Image (tube, rainbow, N blue to C red; front, top):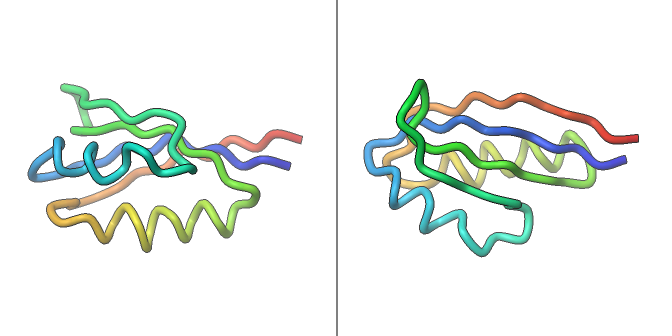
Length: 76
């Protein structure tokens, strides 16, 4: 089963977040948006735990990230 997450990110500098996430194996795409969030990333992992760890230990560790909001999708 693959776990996918659409992650909305509020950040002081969206381009720093994009630079940090581009090229990560887990990240399918990452874009700057002008809406509720500053950056949106679509991420795939093998399970929910790995996805949660990626959000908390990788994304939230990026300087300037203020908040994240994740929508989880499961594939069977």
